[in-house]
Length: 93
Image (cartoon, rainbow, N blue to C red; front, side, top):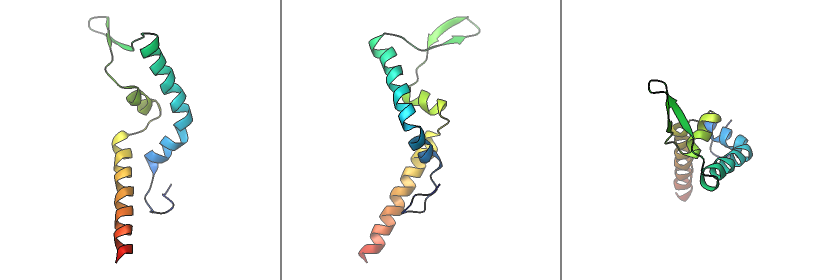
């Protein structure tokens, strides 16, 4: 999909927009579990057979779950800004 006014392809940003409501609900639930209920997400170390806390943000879990590449999303944001700046600069001349 393309940005209506700038012509930039919006793969990741469009995905973010499409999952925004579901992502919000899941994120709020994870935050509630962590901050109000005291739960910690852990992963199993297969060698030691012990669980260790995962040091990953809620945002990171959401990106993984929804298959969103944060680097690509940021590149798309920067491209949109650059396109707008370029168009704005050309309109001033």
